[in-house]
Length: 263
Image (cartoon, rainbow, N blue to C red; front, side, top):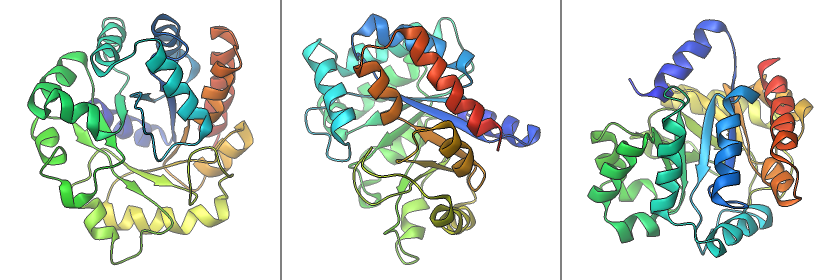
């Protein structure tokens, strides 16, 4: 059982929904992002998504694109991202970390080398948005053999013919993208999300966490009420980009997690 599996088992036993937060590794710099990361569990975060900066983030909107650019300009790399996770792990051995990004940096490092390094750094799961199920042999299957969850995205355009293929080798949870388009481009609607969550949960047998378009405590609660949890990314990253203090960023995260946990 991974930390992700253990977390969702514990939340289910408590009758609680999950709150998942996304931050970009190295934004605005490595030490500040690590300080924010260390504060996330205390702000009510159940699972941390740690963004891996990449030069061509095709699924991300301007807010996260710019965060990735800032991180890259500051010298952030895959190796430094794993180092950041390892430093977090020295103080927190229970909060799950999901590395979210694109395949190119992993391919460049080499899959076997990456998986060994990720395990050593305390990474629990991967979301690699540009690897479809047809490429499961590239990373998904080796990752799961190494004990990491491989989390797949489902979207409003994932129909009943496609869905079984999408969830076939998925583990940990399914990330439901509540809108068509890029991150930060629209708001999620609980009425639209609810039937999709039920459909995906039935097909996968896994918790379904909803992201994209969640940016307020009220929205966080509304989406968590119809899902197994909620992800917030762009709204948090925007606070970091605006120069908010670490304490102010974490206070905002706490308001969002309080919303999700009130569901």
